[in-house]
Image 1 (cartoon, helix red, strand yellow):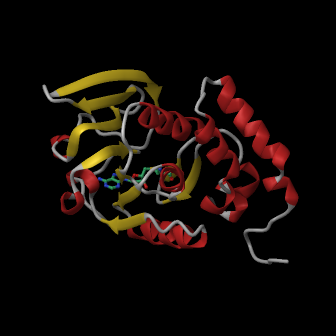
Image 2 (tube, rainbow, N blue to C red; image 1 turned 90 degrees about the vertical axis):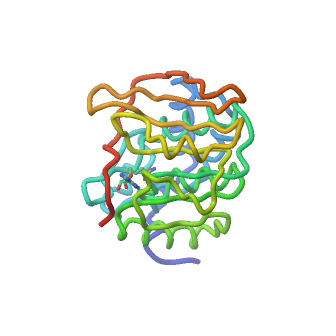
Length: 221
Ligand code: SAH
């Protein structure tokens, strides 16, 4: 038997608890079966503080320290589904690693994942979780992600999990032709989930639903 903090009782990780989350995602319109399977199988409780573990399979954002939050499972599923349905996902940049939960979902379903985070302590914790989950196709860096990760550009996919007031131009410049940027755009209270596709002719924009993310902030700490 394993012991340790990640084995905290059957209640948290029971099949029923996880099936309930997946049913809720389905009810909200998530259709992609591999995305649903991934969210069912991934242990979200290891991405939050032990004190919050009992709420890890609720469909809500939860605090992860430093004023930041682990994203709501619904929005993680939705963004991932949109990306999988719109083209290649072999090389992926995530801006805003946070807990690493979205990172892990990407790593399960896509190719090589590069993820940047401006708060060093969060980046370090996420790195431990990637190791624990044996996700070796992830590379993390503690840096301000507004500038992307030019060393590894261009990307098939760029996913931003914090909201700027307008789309950072540097990120658009790091998309392959056919590549997509998915990003919440706007001030707190009126953000729109936005998909921008780099086509032969330029950039095409599509707006999805209203969302609520923490702000994309400049600089690192
Ligand atoms: N996907 C993450 C979401 C974390 S919240 C999860 O599910 O856990 C968004 C994260 O973006 C925060 O950790 C915040 O510190 C980070 N962030 C904000 N501005 C950033 C920037 N300019 N560069 C990199 N990360 C940033």
